[in-house]
Amino acid sequence: MASAAQLTLPALPALRSLGTLADAKPVLACDTREVQPLQFEHLPCVRKTLAEADYQICGISDFAVERKGSLDELAGCCMGSNRERLEREFRRLLPYRWKRLLIVGATCDEDILSYRYHCDILPKSVLGSLYAWQAAFNLPFVLTPSPQTAARLIERWAHYWCAYRVKELNELLRGCQEAEEVQ
Image 1 (cartoon, rainbow, N blue to C red):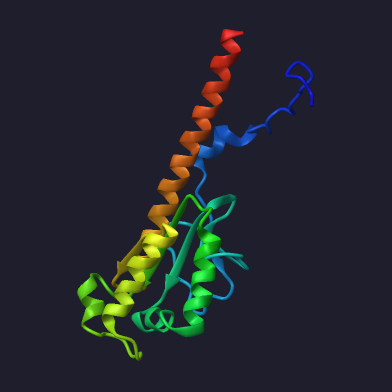
Image 2 (image 1 turned 90 degrees about the horizontal axis):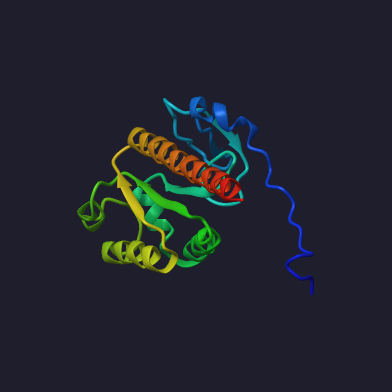
């Protein structure tokens, strides 16, 4: 085992473009398998095959949004092999620091409880599934009334998550500079 005096670490990658980062806009990625992709007004979006989720931010590996486009789609995912597939997807999202399950077509629990979908599963089971997934996979769910509102939410989440990440990088840079001043 190497002693501390013998250990050398490579330099961190240069953040040459950090100065222009304040003027940059995050770029969203939409999975190519999305049949009806959301239309974004404020952020650019590219189509690409994503390993997890339906929406991510290009260049950031810890932001993911899984979208269910309707209550029918959500209810269909609460049973049988569809449920197993979705839970495998949720397991793959566990390492993500920021993740959401976004459900279009509802604004509150009562929309689900009033059986506003065409699937043979009880509303309490659908709602119970949402809360169970939230607990088991640390995956908050958000209900939204329309695709337009869903798109605006994703844009806001992406913007604020990127702002948070830039702040983290700036703090890292300041920490490195402080250590250099002490030496």
